[in-house]
Length: 91
Image (cartoon, helix red, strand yellow):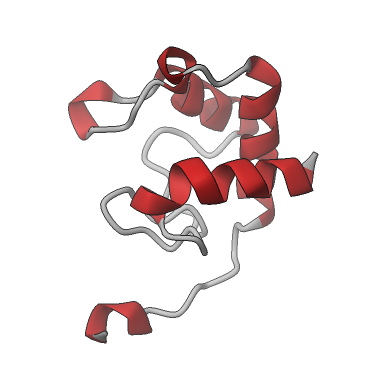
């Protein structure tokens, strides 16, 4: 589940959240300051429904299956507290 979630995250989420989930256009997903809730269910809901006013796609409208949403949310949960480097800002 985690490996499949990582693959989907890299292809679908990393363009906005970076491959290490440290945030770019989309917010950092590795810290404890989750805008739309810290629970696993909150992550699933955000991925599935999106947040249109913030530019987050509703992945249900992009063809993502419920099982894939669970996989991505599971992978994201493994990244909490990983503290990715911020050196990309100076590149």
